[in-house]
Picture 1 (cartoon, helix red, strand yellow):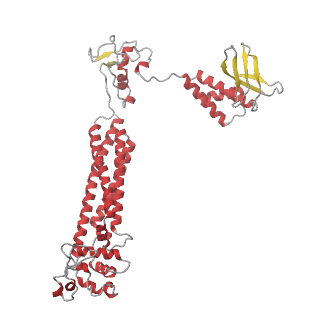
Picture 2 (tube, rainbow, N blue to C red; picture 1 turned 90 degrees about the vertical axis):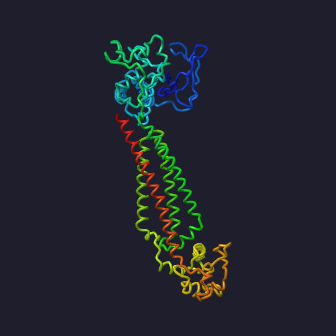
Picture 3 (cartoon, one colour; picture 1 turned 135 degrees about the vertical axis):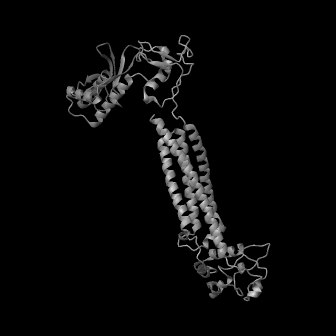
Length: 474
């Protein structure tokens, strides 16, 4: 830096820094303040000025700023000269020497950053290949076996895979043969202790000893787990859009705001998403051998297992709390209050579908329709005693939405002897109970299979975690 005092105002001091060497032998300099156009040319050791453009756009630097710059330059120089001293100690000594009274926090941060950058530039770059290594006092023919020796001497290098290729530039003809002997003592003038034995052959320290079978099994079963999660999502979509299941579940009396099918589809979707997400976490954990991801995977599996086990036990032990245990009296009352009533069209379609599909009539018998709102409020068509879905249908046509009975007259006859050959006399209660038991069995089987697969995955994950912990503390 070259300081020049303004002639008109001696308190103003301008600093010019070197810009470039000119062809004429002069040195081009410019103002040290950013966005300032002032420049000059100097020559000789006495800094003679041959040309000067003193049109300063900003104001010159204040004395405090000059002190801060001088302090920063001194700190960088001392930081390079005294590599072992703490930056804070160097900075305190310079502040006391220069009698700096006002120093902002931002200036301190900038000075410390400049000291760090100066020290970093003074250090040599780390070697990226074995050929660029320079170890004083160690012969070149020792370098091919140096990583194995260091790994044997220091447990901090237990994760490194140390394998030196025989085509290394140090494996020349002058180097001792790999097959000459298995071990060789070091010379006394080497950098390692006297009598230390170096292995001749390359030594490999694998990071995951015994992990390959566990990893393969865990990846395989997690692939199946991921596919199972996608299958549960597909099952949720099928259950949610199945009209027949929706019609059957609407007949079951429940205190919930929505039919049971809605909650079953929602449970399948959530379980499928969780299974797929956990499978992806396991893939990433085993690919990178990340213990944090593996711990998160095990925690998610445990939480999912607790939820599924609770749901399966609750479904198997207390199905009546979910509305899966049919009460005949409640079902009869529901049919009589809702069948054929305006605004209950979905329930009416469900009753017609069950009676057509299972060839039944009413809950226990067709006589229940005589006291239903459908007849008492005269909502039925003239001449109907029971719904047309209670009549025997044409063999080629089985439509519950528009039933076509074989003999409508005999079907609607009130005499049991006359209508027993044209009307279904058996109630639908037995068929409904069989269907509910079948659905509960399917749900329990699916839940039990999912729990069994997750227990296997949990066991494999715990084994992988234990193996990783043993490897890291070996």
